[in-house]
Image (cartoon, rainbow, N blue to C red; front, side):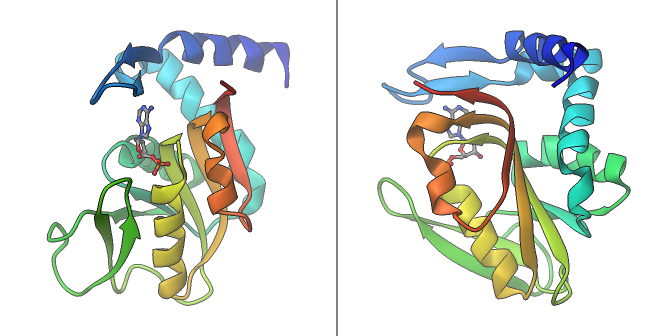
Length: 181
Ligand code: AMP
């Protein structure tokens, strides 16, 4: 890590604000809206993500709505590769493939267009926060259901104490920032 990168990471860190008890009691919500309001530091965020994942040689980026799109689209543009949206049910036109996954209470479902990935394509998954890992492991399952290969995952922030990376054991995990407690 160069001194320049460390300074950029400090600037990024300063613009992620913690909001206690949102959206429900006990959750320390990581608010990225101050980062999005600062084009220079947001640009540095995408550049740092790009330098982490460049050597993977991904064919496509896939990301879950909605905050995954915020980082996934500019990163795909920087890498000059396509972007696939992963959405909640009923949002995508045409044929879709879906995966159901467990939440703390009940289940949720995500979908992708059924023609979005060709078998064997190398997919990089992107999201803002890695928490328990439930969302990203469902995204991995969806990509694999379509014959794609998840070659890595990239996050702005990892809540490492929740050990979400254990849910995607075969995946390389890149995160710009980590919180350990
Ligand atoms: P998980 O499936 O538990 O890894 O949660 C990841 C998803 O939930 C990401 O798409 C995040 O946007 C969101 N998320 C989970 N925990 C937080 C948090 N503490 N602050 C902000 N977003 C969160």
